[in-house]
Image 1: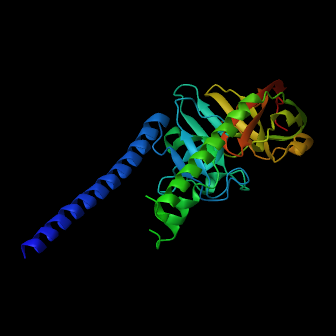
Image 2: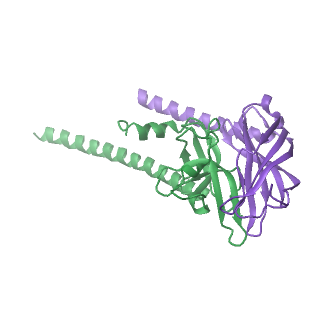
Image 3: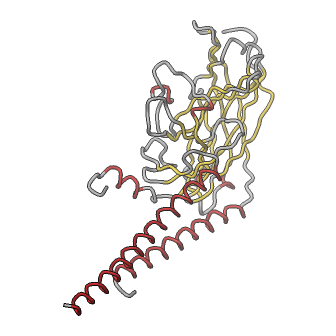
Amino acid sequence: MGWIGEQVDSLKSMQIRQVLTQAVSLGMIVTSALIIWKGLMCLTGSESPVVVVLSGSMEPGFKRGDILFLHMSKDPIRAGEIVVFNVDGREIPIVHRVIKVHERKDTGEVDVLTKGDNNFGDDRLLYAHGQLWLQRHHIMGRAVGFLPYVGWVTIIMTEKPIIK
Amino acid sequence: MHSFGYRANALLTFSVTILALMCAIASLSDNLNSPSPTAQVQVLNINWFQKKPDGDDEVSMSLNVSSNLESLFTWNTKQVFVFVAAEYDTPKNSLNQVSLWDGIIPSKEQAKFSIHTTNKYRFIDEGSNLRGKEFNLTMHWHVMPKTGKMSADKLVMTGYRLPVTYR
């Protein structure tokens, strides 16, 4: 009985140690991923420093599944830049190119019109009802670089709930 | 330490790191390229020029856009997005940029072109300031790489002027 008790004790202590080690390792991985994510947010000045391209509206430049690196600076928005913006009421950000800019002399406020390279018409259909222009506060960042195909992992995870 | 899981994990991490490094080097190699593009835009005709019912001016014009962008292409270039924008200022707006035409150049072979087109996007002012307005036509090009950092530049062509009266 004493011998069995000894065995169970040593087994328990070994298992607890193993479980704790694994839990700590997992915690480390999660927190370092979070640190990298938040660090990127600070570095790029954008709320969402990396986005995945979800639609084909910017083909052949950006295909579905590509990852875009964003950067937001105080520089004024100019035509030709690829910007990421949120429309009021929609949660998914859109990545399109600026085709028209009207910048006010007195306030520096800007009216911006965007369009997907692969779309026929401009984005007015995507904006909120009655909205004709985007303003600076709608824009989350500019696309400055990209990696192909890497975003498929995120798309698969979000669109196939099974894997989630 | 030698289980399949560990080995697969190590292999995957290593290969992803190497791939990321290769992408970074590919992107850096683009800096070695020193491009010398040329461009010319002519306004062939002002088709019509009116004040819309809502009070904004609008003009329709035919353009001849010719350009040689071959020197922008490297082995890491996926496409070049080129557009011509009219740029001008008004009493209320310090800068207006209106894209008149854009195109995608997928390869070096198609980078030397000369086309005749009406403005693809409507040239509408915020207000009624376009009569007799002097404006620049700027050709912008955005180089989109197969992987890595995108770059952009432009060529400003000055000296264009809209008619003094509506037509």
